[in-house]
Length: 147
Image (cartoon, rainbow, N blue to C red; front, side, top):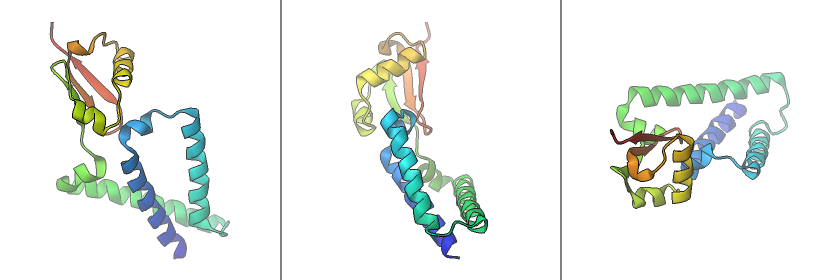
């Protein structure tokens, strides 16, 4: 039973840490970030299982994490008022060709990064963008002005 409580506790901590980091950071992993992610994963595993290396313990931990994930998804689906707190909200970055500086600062997103993302989606100029939205999954959607 101790494994269940530790797994649920670590799940909660990881959930809040990922919300704190911000969605943009999770979509742009540099080599150092990837190494750090592996190290954190190993530390989490050690914290959850401690000295229990049994197959049963592993199954209990995996089952607990799957249950916590499913419960969080169900709560998000069932209670629309909590959905924004759990999943986050899309954030408008550009509206009718004008940057929304407050939202860019809040998400720690630079103009250069926004321009690079626009180029990746074949958008030549930000002034041609009707709407740019940082989605809840960390991707940026661009809608161009009609010509």
